[in-house]
Image (tube, rainbow, N blue to C red):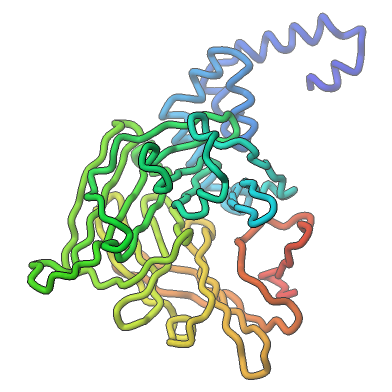
Amino acid sequence: MSMALLDNPLSNTLMVKKELKLYKLHKDILAQILVRLPVKYILRCMCIQNSWYNLIRTPTFITLHLNHQKSSTHKRTTYHLFLNLPDDLKLALRFDDVQCEELLVENLPPGLSHLNWYELTHDWHALSHGLICLKLMCSSSLRGIYLWNPLIQKSKLLQQSPLPMYSAKNTMWEALAFGFVPGLGDYVVVHILKPDWFDELEPHPHSVFIGVYSLNTNSWKKITINNFLVHRIERASDVFINDTAFWVGRNFDKDTIVMYFDTKTDTLGEILLPEWASSSVYPDIRIVPYGQSIACFAKRRNSQNSDDWNMWVLEGNSINEFSWKTRTSCTSEEVRGSIVGIKCKGPFVESLVFLDIEEKN
């Protein structure tokens, strides 16, 4: 509407009247309009006037926007985080809005600008709706967990995690996840630590410590789980869907598993992958968001020296009742690489190879 009016120099008065009417819309009607916009455009709308800014920041609108995204999963924006090494030490945040646009983040969060990009490769990253959660370990003076919005270049140092601090030598594995919980209208950080106990007399040698941070309350809660037999968690394997965080790992039987933590019930568990992916062949495993669930991709080399790919989708009616449904499979004879993620149909992206899940081409 406004663009058409701007093309006509004689319609300036009409344009002002139209815009004034838009500004006077009831907040409920305005919310129904704004809720259909992607996050990047909503951020721009916050700069138009104070009433829009205040509306967009309310928990009610945030929940409304998240629920609208859930009901339009085929149009939902997904994000992929790339850290380019070793020559171009830049962080790229790619948001898949059909055009697969990309924001190149050239500046680190305020207060951390003196850090080297390379140092961040040794730290933990988690991503949710374009927001980045960083756990810094490279500098003792800056150690901590940060939330960072690269679009507006704002960051927040969270209160210190309640988990005990162990050296890398005494830590078996660590896990980090960050996401939005629609039922609570809250962003949460999940931080899990598995100590590497050397003392055989330790009463709980397979204990793990869990810290859950709430952005609404700006506070942590600590949970201890005993006898949790997961031997390893892969870095940068986190996926957060609704109330639950997922990671790829291995148990002490050397089976590849998906570890999950339900933030509503404080349940920590593991899900065995299909036998094809969980075998001792050590296939390349990746989990990615898929609608309101997760998809698992597994790749391994066959006897003809080609790559076999399988994809499954996680299904489950309730906690601890999960199953995998085969979605697609294929063999790649010419292309070798790793799965990055799932994107909406749209233009190809340079240097990436795409497989149409529906057509298998």
